[in-house]
Every structure is written in structure tokens, then in C-alpha cells.
Image 1 (cartoon, rainbow, N blue to C red):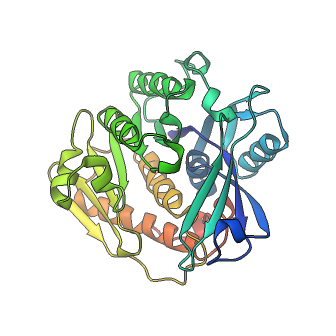
Image 2: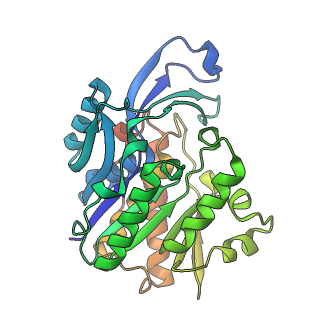
Length: 316
């Protein structure tokens, strides 16, 4: 089976014990492993796929916890480096009444930002593998250039590049720099997953269809557009399909997007990391599978701990 590699941040999410309370007024927090790339690697591993996480953690107790958590669900941590130069990143989360979130990050810098391009192996990847990344670690730091090295190496091996911008504006001093950086990386990717609350910001285009069409630049073969509870759509240059959302009782939306793309990438691994041969009918089935994974995740607390296993999802 092909293998998924994710690169970027793994961090500690501190989740409040109550919702509808501003972060400044939260009294108790629960520690959870998090970070979108790490979550996606875990989502694939929990579904039975092969995955690895590429990143750097602090030589601290939180770093130990993250490595142990990744390994416990079957993620390959052979490409996780440790450093004493900075601590593992932390994120404190406030849950709104509807289960959505606000974040406060502690990473100035954090260990993940210090991963360098020299620490990326050019021979790690093989044809049919997938590299997935987000925008949090595309800030102007060594880790940005580690991403570029990994992307080039995966492409040279004949693998697929997947990009979920996963915009976190509080981490960027200049929001326009965030937007321009994402636009720099979109053409380097074969698959782009974008959410309804990111589309206009990233593209600068208000019309939905025009904005989605503008993302078909460079190497982009498919755009997956998520609308939260309203479902998702899969766009190719030659067709598009969509599926409705699933109505569930939401407890916590943390990790829902990662569960969605993890489930989708799991199916692409079964397709040997190939997107261009997927027809409309199969794309619709993949979306439904991913939608179910995301919906189920929102009914449970936490990120990695709430990710589904394959037996909980309907067969494709």
C-alpha cells in the first residue's frame, strides 16, 4: 500500500472543560495531542492506512507525549526530530456554544518551526506515496523551506502533493503575507482542500465558482471544497460533484477537518496516490466517506482521540 507522509506542526491542544466561555475565563483544560498534519497522519493510521509524520518537537515532556500518542495509533515517527533549542508548541482552545473554536498559540518560536531543509531526506518517498501539508508552518522560518524540499522530493519520486491551507490568522503578523504564501504553494500541489470560510480570503474573489476555478493553477488536479455541516464538493477540470452534510449533535469540532481529509487521503492511498483517474461517481463516494468521518468526529471530544476507525464507517 502507498504511504501518507504529513509534514508540519504537532502540538498540545489544551481543551476547556466547558463551552460558551471566553478563553480568559476558562478554569480547567484537558491536554490533547493536536496539530493538523499530525492529526491527519493519525486519521489515516486509525483507518488502517500507512502513515508517517515529519516534524520537530521539543526535548520536553510534551514532545514525549506527542511521540507516544502518534506511535500508539500506528503512525511512523522515524522522521520526528527533537531539539533543545525550543519547546513543543502549545495551543489553548476556547469552545463556543456551537462547538466551534478560538485559539491562543504559544510558539515564539516553537520546535516545529526549526525543522530545516537539510533534515529532509530526498530518498524517503516512493511512487504512489502522498505528502500532505498545511499553512501553519509556512511562516518565514526554516520549516517553510523544509516543506519546499519535501514537496520537490515527493514529486521527484512520483508521489502526490496534498495541501489544506487550514488558515490560522493569529499566527501571522501580516494577513496579506499569509494569503500570498498560500497562493505561492497552491500551484505546487496536486490536490487542494479549502473550506468555505477560507475561499474568499485566499483567492480574493467573492463569487464561489469563480474563486474555485482560480485555484486550478500549476499542478492542481482537484479542489475539494468543504462547507461544514452543509457538505462538501469535489472539483476536477472536467466535472464536479457534491454531497450534503450530515446532521449530528456537535460536541467539539476540533479535528473534524483533519478527519475529513484523513479519510479522503486514506481512499487515495487505496487508489495508489492517483487523482486524475478518479471519475465523478468514485469522487462522490469518497466525499461521502470523508463526510461521515468528519461528522462522527464532531460528536466526540478531542482531536486524535475522536478520530474514527474503519469499522465505524460505511464501506465505500
